[in-house]
Image (cartoon, rainbow, N blue to C red; front, side, top):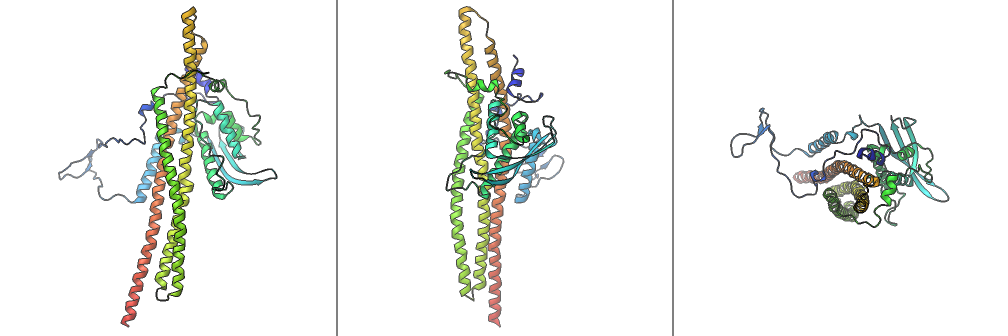
Amino acid sequence: MSVKAARGRMSVGAPRGLASSGQKPIAEIIHPLSAAEEPLSPGPDVTITVGGDKEVGMTNGTPVETSSPASASSLFNRLQLDDDLEADVRDPYASTETRDLFVTVDDPKKHVSTMETYITYRVSTKTTRIEFDLPEYCVRRRYQDFDWLRIKLEDSQPTHLIPPLPEKFVMKGVVDRFSEEFVETRMKALDKFLKRVADHPVLSFNPHLNTFLSAKDLNKRQGLALLTKVGESVKHVAGGYKLRARPAEFCAMGEYLDTFTQKLGTIDRIAQRILKEQSEYLTELREYGTVYSSWAGSEEELQRPLEGVASSVTTCCGALDVQSENMSQDFLPVLREYILYIESMKNVLRKRDQCQAEYEGRLEAAILRKQEDRTPMPVEVEKCQDKVECFNADLKADWERWQSNKRQDFKQLLTGMADKNINYYEKCQAAWESLITLLQDKQTEDKASETN
């Protein structure tokens, strides 16, 4: 059996022409956490003279601006533009012109019954694919329905990386799972999960996804019984056989994931502490401003300056409150999503190792039998080899797609964080500068009254 034919069986529902091979070797992927950086060299159109009188410029005579850095807003816009350009070049599936399946998760609603209380979300779909009977669908799904979909995808597409869902359970006494903030955060995470599945060139053609998006009533017990032979074999392979050695490129994947997990975990813990300290500081700051307000009521001569201080403190409180909300609703969820993403990737790597162990075990047994009675190599060994090669190709394709998405997500995350920090400090600065103006006006008035 050829590798191409085996891959067709492994990727159920995948359209022809969407092969997942041809990806870059893992060794060629730049490690974003590496401390080493390559020096930047000027392009062929740039001329630079050190120590001379010649200005930095292009070979066509266009001068290059070398003065002060650009403003924060222009830098922010430039980064966003660079992201858009890179996305168009790297990921053809991200272009709306080539996509034919659009999904959205929104409109959360609370349902209360005698047995349970739960939240459902509206799932809207627009598509031109012939696999769907209608061009548009609108259904309501709850969290366990999304969980059902992910399990079905994982069972029927064992060689592919399945995007993670947000965690189902929360710590009691810490977060109310029916609070507006929690429901909003979960809705965004479910929307991102479904969009990632719909944008995947293989997962988006899975029949279970079709059912999830279009069925009015989702019968999770019956399902579609689409668990493939490949999925069954991956679950029950390598009976006691230990993998000899994982290939170097997949070892590099595992090491990268371990390092990435450690970095994200550390950032997450520190961010949690910052949020806690900000909350405590905000409480103290509000009490601080109240003192000045009450003082102003009993000190007529200093009333205006004291009210100005109270107003500046109130402005800073509002800015800090927004800053904390941005961190809890925008920054932390992305970190947690990628921590879960890493676990999903490690799970696929373990399945790949199991598949390789099955092949090595069958191959070793076949070699021993061949030495004894000179029998030809069994067909099962060739099938196992095809499965390993398909697993490797699919995993490499999903790894590169995951790396591309990660670069985009973290560029947007860090750029947004920088922009929000700038806005926070600008608000605080403007508040205190207005107080200085008020104090200067008060001083001028006092001098004028003394003169008169």
